[in-house]
Length: 237
Image (cartoon, rainbow, N blue to C red; front, side):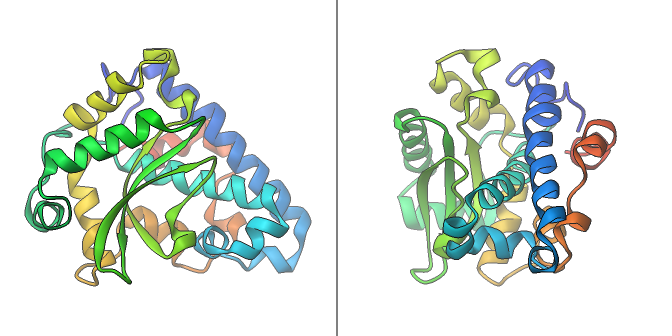
């Protein structure tokens, strides 16, 4: 979708800064580290990095920047420029009712978790394959539930650059807008089907995580992000 597609909930100014400044910097940093790291890093896929507790401890700069690349690509797909918001349907709606009692209960839990979160981070709806249920978690910094074996279904970006230009410190209004007008339930349902083994891997997660491509091949450079990533991330909702 286009940079103005999420207005009035997220302004074009915010989305441009988010994608072309913040996300591009994460991409640039990862490519630099991988380029200097030799073969030991170049063979790793995005998912291998994001899942690795060893890398998180031994190379936190690489881990955090790679996780932020993964998280942002996922977050951008969790919103739709047309037809977003409202309530989920189908398998996702049924699973939410089973695990939370109702969609309202899930929304309240994600809202509360997001508003109360200290500092910057991400509020995730994930599928715990071991427990076979949906779970909500707020993770600080570049946190991603894959490192705990939980499959991401949906995420809200709670870093200030995602909302501050539009809402200042009013997190609640930002979150309400996300649920009312933006959330891409179709994409979330694809993620759930994948997590439960009932569907194909969604396009974006497959692209960055499951081909086993070197990071340099899987990610764009910061320069390309500024010039052409709009066609890859924001052309379609």
